[in-house]
Image 1 (tube, rainbow, N blue to C red):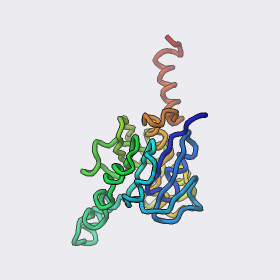
Image 2: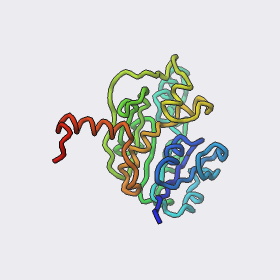
Image 3: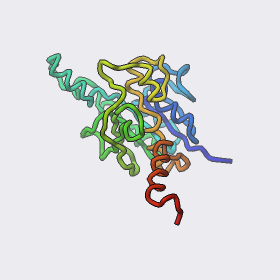
Length: 234
């Protein structure tokens, strides 16, 4: 019988990561303090993913994916600090990794491997991998940073995005680019990561060995192989 690795999707929301996991050869459980049982694509547990004593009940999964709140680190928060004359910095105003017990949860769950997602490189992430949509042939940038317990090469390219998150923001187009439902809230669509990011990271994770690279990268690799070799195998 084929073994499917267990992935705990902490701070899951309605399923930005879960939708990608549901198409991969893994088992997954979403955990969020909000009730997303009807929306989440798979098994869901309503609980505080920052509650160490609760999270340690999970049986040492192959992979722990954490997407803690990012307001303390986002560029928008730091811009708003000057705009609204806050008397606190974003890291003082919003919960940080330390406030959310991120490191303690990882230790308590004791997964084989882990991934921490955040919108920006910060002093709370350790040597993160950088991914953006342009590297996967998507019409969005959506740059994200991921601290991983395994080695992952960056996948970041420069260029012009077809879909902007500014005044030209279009909910349906952005949702389609990320592979999430358009009826999600604007903040849920914005915070979701493209499914290609999930596939790419799990492809490099030793605990999820049967996850292939995203199709766009496989096609690009094939095209480069044909250009270099003329299609002839050694």
